[in-house]
Amino acid sequence: MINNYEALDLGRYMKIDAILHKPAEDIDKQVQIIAILADMPEDKVLLLPLADYASMAKETAFLGRICEPAKVDGEPIEVNKLRLVPTKDFLKINTAQYVDFQTFAKGFPGTLPELLSCFLVPEGKAYNEGYDIADVQKAVRSLNVPTAIGLVTFFLLRFSQSIADSLTSLEKEASRDRKKAKIWKEKSKEIAGLLQTIGAGLPI
View 1 (cartoon, helix red, strand yellow):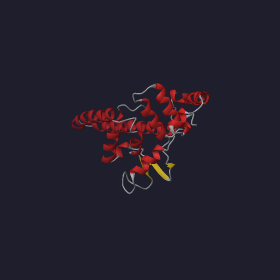
View 2 (cartoon, one colour):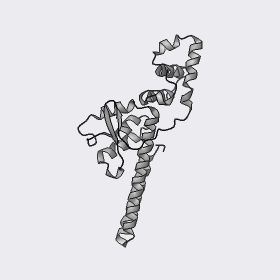
View 3 (cartoon, helix red, strand yellow):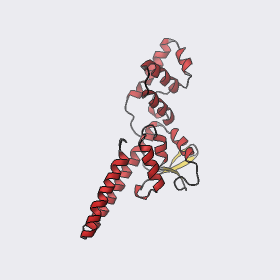
View 4 (cartoon, one colour):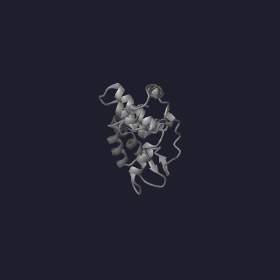
């Protein structure tokens, strides 16, 4: 039975998260969670001796603790026979990536696999070209939870840094003449708004 985040894949975690957020009795939720972590049908869980059930329920206690994110350095990740390259420069993302990320961010955390698939691109490919993005999302679901959270943190930090670098560059240009200063003021508001929109609801 899975009893730690390192052994828990994102796919199972998403199922558990859905269970925890739906209206149901706590005991019913516990049975469903044990079934997922022990890879057992729910009816088999209900037939367990009470002592065995209590022992397994105790093993689920890790879900009440904060999951520390794994350190992600931007190197390619190999999973499900795919070599996925994390996006590092958010100022170079294409429109499709931006639109998809905006869409999936609204459903976070329920859309975490889809959100991560926006910025994990198979090596040698352009975003959503020459590969099936569903394969990437399937691979993402098999990542353990610390790695998945580490990737979210990495992407948001890179995005924030990209925006900060852009603002610094614009500010330097704007200081050279008044016309550019006006453009800088308008652009800075636009970028600041973009940052707030994309980052909304996503913890760093």
